[in-house]
Every structure is written in C-alpha cells, then in structure tokens.
Image (tube, each protein chain N blue to C red):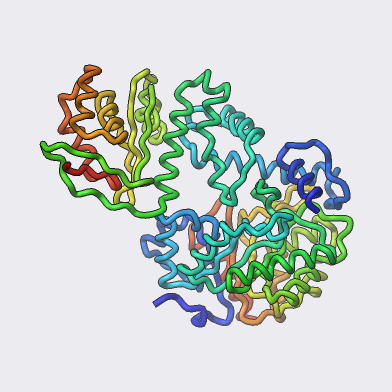
Length: 248
Length: 277
C-alpha cells in the first residue's frame, strides 16, 4: 500500500505524470485523468487560498494572475509537511528571496515577511502576553524580551507604508530605499505594527542584541545617527508586551 | 456551568463554528442551535482569539471536535506529536463527540490536505483496526469516523464502505459520523443506489450526522458545502429517519457562508421534518 499511496500522492501533487493503476472512476467522467484532476485542482486551490489569506498584501501588490503564478511556483517546489494547512506559508518569504520575483520586486520578500509576522502574531498567538509597566528613566537600561511576544523585522525599504496602504486598500506611494525596522505584536486583542526609522532601528536592534542602553547609544553615535528623539524612541518601546526595559 | 450534552433535545441541531460567525457570537447574537462542531486543527496551534471564542462558546454549548488530519488510513504511523496536541485540546474543551475521516491525507509525512480513499480489503481492515485501537488507547476515548466523498475507488475493494465501517465499529468500539451528502455524491458519481448504502449501515454505531450541499459539475457531483440542503437529501433524511435515535445533526456550510441564522435555518428544516414524522 505504501507504494500505491506514494503514486497517488505524487500524481495529485504534480510530482509524477504516471497515472496510478488499478483505480475505479466515476462513470460519467470521460477519463481516469479527469477524476484525479479533481484532486489536483483542489491541491492547487488549497495553496492559493491559504497563501492568499495569509499573504494578503503580497497578493494585492502582485494582482491575481502573478500571485497565482507565484503560488504555483511555490507549490511545485514545496512539500507540505504539516497537518495544519496554515503552515503552508511559513517558508513563503524565503522562497520569494530565491525566486525570479525577487529580482523584479526586491521588497516583495520583506512584504511577505511582514504578512507572515502579522499572521503569526495575530492568528497563531500561543499565549496572551501582558504589557510591561516599567518606564524608561535616565539610568542605564537593559531590554529583556519574552520569546514569541513580538516579531522584529528589518527592511531596506519603507515596507511599513507599503503594507499599511495595501491593507487599507489604498494606492501605495513610491517605494523608497530606506532602512526601516518594524515591530509586530498584539496588545489587548489588537494587532500593532510599529515602524522605526533608521536611527531608532539601529538603537532597538542594538538593544535587542543584548547591549545596554549606554552601549547601544554609543554605537549609534559612532555611526553618526540622529538620536535627538531618544526618549521618544524609548517611550515607543514602553508598554509593548514581552518587551521589558529594566534598570541595571 | 458548561453546556451539557444531556440538555439536548431528541433531535439536536448543530452547526459548524466558522470565523465568519465570530462577530455574531462575540456580540451575543441569538443562537438557536443546540451545539457546535469545531475543526480541531483550527484550534490546536493557537491560544489567541479563535480559541477564546471557542472557550466562551463552550460555557453555554456542547462542542463536537472534528478533525481533518488524523490520517488513519495512511501507511504512516500515528503522529503522536499531533495526538498530544489534540489530547490537550480535548482536555480543555471536553467535547461530547470527537471525530475524523475514514481516509488518508498524506504519506511519508507529505500532506495532500485532501481526504483520500483507500482499498477496502480484509488486509487493510485489519491494519486500520489495529491503528484505531492504538489511537483510542492513547487518547483514552472512542473516535467516530466519517464516510468519505471520493472521486476514485480501488478495483480490489472487498467491502462496500458501509460494510467496512460497520466492521471497524464492531471490532474497535469506534463510532460512525454519517455524512448523508457524501453518500449521495458517491452514489450519483459511481452510479449506485444511495439507499443501498443506508440499508447496509448499522445505525447503532451512528453518533452524529452531517448534512451539506454539493455542486453539480455536469459530469460529476462535487462535495462543496456551498449552499442550503437540496430536496433530494431531505428525501433521504426522511427515509432514514426511522432508523435514527436522538440524532445529532450538523449543517456544514464552508463556502459562500451566510449569516449564522441562515445556516441554522437549514438544519431546522430537518428538525421540523423530524418532529412531524
């Protein structure tokens, strides 16, 4: 039976063109192929539906035809290994990076990563994280993080604006090359997507890497980043679930 | 206090819990059905909003948990990592019925995300029974298995599906989730008599029923769950009703899903029919 299940599965998922033998088909269908095509179409539709639902801004950016081609290309190379159909898209951004679409749309994979972060934070939350109440003062601070409470992304494009325009069904503005950080988290049942400009991004990144505030600021000064809004940046970090600023 | 199964009426009506109906449930909209069925896989990997809604709903209603990934007829072994998660969900929700499909969905850990038929032979019967026994022992409870809508079958089949499921229930103590729509779709596609299937079924094993709609694709019927109940299915229900004791009937609606009251209306068509019989 192992061999037959493999033959059937390979045929349905497009990995083999050899029609499995010894099967019986509905009498009105013109050929055995027509019967298994029902499953082939369903398999293709599953990818399109799941990826469309979880990567909505990528879909909106590309339009129906190109997004379907991208999904088909992903399906041809990607074997689903999870019982959970929603896991289908977990490797989608990495797939895009290695695809021809990345050459054409260099920010597409970053947009997909943001969609994936939204999906993971909003729809697959494992626990409800609580907000930190410690306020950043003038003393030196550490940033302590709780795993999976938020997702931090970095892009060389103004990806947040693109994502929010697409999410709101607005026409999007010109894509700019611009270093940007984005923090995705959930608070009080609401999804929060927070952008950080170049200076803020380096500061947060340095803190997330384990540096103390004074060390992180020193690093930013070294590369001549504008830190005139330091307090403002620290306040932005305040209250984010799973992210704790502690005095040391 | 949790919703209890023993509060159910003689005919108890259920509908599938779908995200489209979350606002209705959250806003405390009127609910007339007796119970809900939730898809297990939608809740085992999250403790976010969907899970909270399911927990909230469980306060007032009995819940049946229905899976799509058990993969019982696969040549693969049982996936105990998946079963552990399922077990944990069962402990929280305390479902009154747990079920999946009599089918395989993947092989060698590669998923088709579809419900696929298998050859109903004596050898395979023995194989599946052993797997079900291991499953039920590990989970500490009995499972119900749903008959399949399938678009191919196997030349070497030695049992009809009804005979095969009867035999499994007898040998393992598992139960049947009888999907009337699937029986009808298969019968039409393979040019058999749907009533012959119901004559073969031992109704003492049936713990739940599904009713849904299909799409006529010209050359075949497709099990799409995309609308209200067709009259031919209502006719079948009328014929099999005398065999049913306290039927727990669920209306499945998975595409072009309307508001919750409209889905409820469909299952109430059968309820009023049952009450008139």
